[in-house]
Image (cartoon, rainbow, N blue to C red; front, side, top):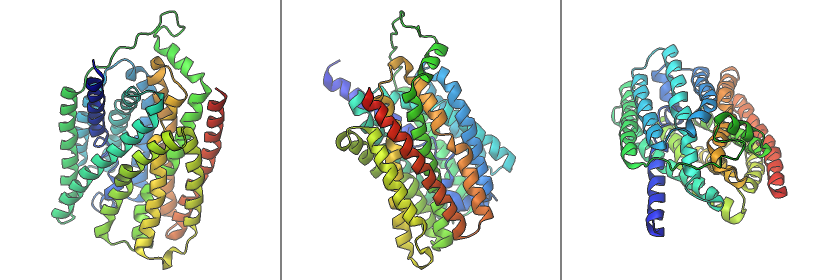
Length: 415
């Protein structure tokens, strides 16, 4: 295959992966744009929304363990479309506004379809598209592309919600739209993606293609643990971003008409800017995703710490919106590249699936407890005090993240 054809194939595959990645989490992350409508029409409290998300994250985290066996054995052509279609049907079920117990079950299933079956295989597929020097850009543009698809799809859903009077019917219709989008893109993915190329493993190696041997060898790499915990602390900060939505509504009296739009910009729109910028800075400016993350932890903690103790009650709505979006931009830039160090530490191809699954299991673990913790804090500490506690915990994640990322940078420099 000539260079031009190979390049086209690479970016066409990347585009299909971005389409799926930008839609599969639309309903599982419904709170990102519809937090307040979920409370109003589904009758959910802060704690219940946090609990549902925690159940999803718990199942997802353990699902990542099983994905070690799946990601290196099944082709993206089968697994990615299957995950999208199954998630679409689960979303249709959620649109019936079932009981809270059923909602918990649906969110548990999201942990299987979105995370165990989809995410590690997506990451492995993206990593395989470029060499070690392209990892920051690839993952950055993945996040940026996801942000673009996320934003377009979310604004259409929000438009449907508003068109139907911002009512319960509007919320149900928006969920239906997201579900249909997943199913359609799943079908498109099946016909457009190719089967993975088989990696030929040297049979003289100790692993000999055996899954458990590969996992054990991967677990013995300290760099994998350092990357995984760097992801962990970025994600702990990221979990707090969704609470900017009720924060602005409650403390800054953000109009209901702006709540959904702000939520889409905060959770999805920022990816469009932050993803590519973070990826390019990591590769071109810092010459290392790990060094970029170390620097960003410092900036994030300083900005968020100062923001926590501002006189919020006398600041204007737009000031609050701008400041929270600045914080979100920093954290999204970090989130865009937090898997890129897996390429930087030179994981062998036969260990890529295991490394991504381990990184996902540890890295996304804050989702198990952070949303429930944050929601419980807000329910038990009404007003500004509760949000300040949440923001300070986010700062704590940032400080710990700086320590771990600094160890990672030193480890890479030694190698």
